[in-house]
Amino acid sequence: MGKRVVVGAVAAVVVVAAAVAFLLLRSAGSPAPAHMSAGEVKAAVAAFDPGRLGAVGELNRVAWQAGPDAVPALAPFIGDPDPNRRFAALYVVARVARARTDLDVLARALTDPVPAYRVIAAGSLAGKGEVRSLGILVDALDPGGPTLPYSDPPRPAADLAREALEAYTGQKFPDATAWKGWWGSAKDQVRWDGKRYVVR
Amino acid sequence: MWSGRWWLLILVAAGLAAVASLSADAANSTGPKGTTIDVTVKIDLIGDDALKAKIERAVRDYWNTDLNHDGELFRFCGKPVKFAAKVLIIPPGGKRRPDAHLVNQHTIPWGTYAVSNVETSEEIASYDPTAENATGYWSNNASDEDVAHEIGHLLGLPDEYTYVDKNDNRRRDADEPSTPKPEYADDGSLMAEQGGHTLQRHIDEIMDKHKVPDAVYPCTWTGTYDYKIDQHILSNGGIQQWYGSFKIFLKEDKSGFHGTIEGELVEDLNLPHCHARTTLFGLKADLGGERRRPTALRPTRSDPLVASLELKPLKESWIGPQFPACANVGRMKDPHVFGILLPLQHLERREEDVYKYEKTETLSRPGAPTTITKKVVVRPKR
Image 1 (tube, helix red, strand yellow):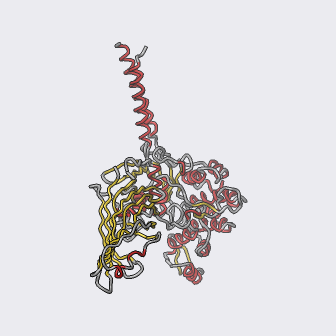
Image 2 (image 1 turned 120 degrees about the vertical axis):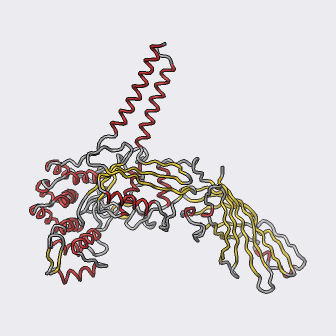
Image 3 (image 1 turned 90 degrees about the vertical axis):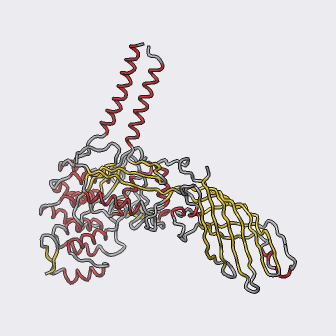
């Protein structure tokens, strides 16, 4: 009888301890934004398949962990015939581009055939002092324009354009017409002062 | 060699441990607290105080206020539903709570594009937010509304928009625009489009997803509806009255209100030279109506649920000596559709479990303006 008690108690303790260990294991650390190598980023972008569940989340994880060194690796994708791959590359490059050569890669997307892609490139370049981005952003303000890819909830590209213009020009206008009026008179005098655009 | 008791003990211990581990998984929890249904969403945030504040603001402004944005909570089965976000900022690689969603913050400059999203192991429509923690990437530049939308996902709500499949390849390509699903195109849903709102059907779906049981929050109501109209008759100063007492049974579910109303409507003509009393209708009718947050409204809100009731004549009787003066009393012989504005918001649950409403209002009817006195006393069914 005494032996049974001991064995039973030990078994119960083992089960409870296993459950506690299970709980502790599940409270694992959060993923650190570990740097992804350029090769890993390139492979992930090349494999971007929006038909797969979680594809946008995976792209977000890549963008979160990518560094500026990924830009040269992604440069060929900016002109890729597949619009999904172009978007994936643009999404990451627009996040991490810093150096002059990176910005030149990003600027290639200013002529992308997909209007929303042009706005994404221009929105990011606007904060880097690229004056040529402003005209694209102003043109994107027209109502009825495209929505941003995979935006959740759906968001017009015009919103991103307005956000960038207001942030970096210090101007606020009620509609696209007013913005176009301002741009028409200011575009030849606009300069980047390191933080925002000023009209001289 | 072991007796059955020991195996039983081990099984119980294992069962308790399993239950403990399962419950620890739930990033969302619900429970009655006082007179409210509380829904708590735990979020571990790898981000900053600004996004944390935005999350808390989004809960306050989108989930803890109904469409009138007046601080009224949405209700489920008469009970206010109160949402709370418990956000804990953790460092990258830091220890997570086992029962919290994880949100990673995209920290980007203005003008740079980032998609805010929530990922689950399966489509969100099938996702159980009480059993699985989701992972999200939310931008520091996301609007409060965007964050409220993502919180909707953490609460188990799927997107209510689709895409224009320009190349018919049955997947949403990056260059294909979004559009609200046709069934949600007109109701201004937070989960369908920018500028949208939280809606009662979202609350219903969240209650379903969080398994809030009808047994705990009863969705059936019984009561009486006392109805009275006084109309002064211009020519002789007499008062014409309609009155009745109706028993109400209502069931509230996602599709609306369904139930019955039963009683009699009497017409009483009090003229100086004539007193005619007629039972106009014996009523037993189905009652139904759209569920437009009627229980989320204040008693003073003039947003009653409109229920059309078909009233059928039961019998007619004449009382009084001067028949000619009362000749207009029996005009409702034929089956007649009679609209009653039934103020269901007054079936509001109160602590004493008694629901009372008394109000006088003017209702347009053919003829002279009519004063209506309505009294509703409803008790929840036990």
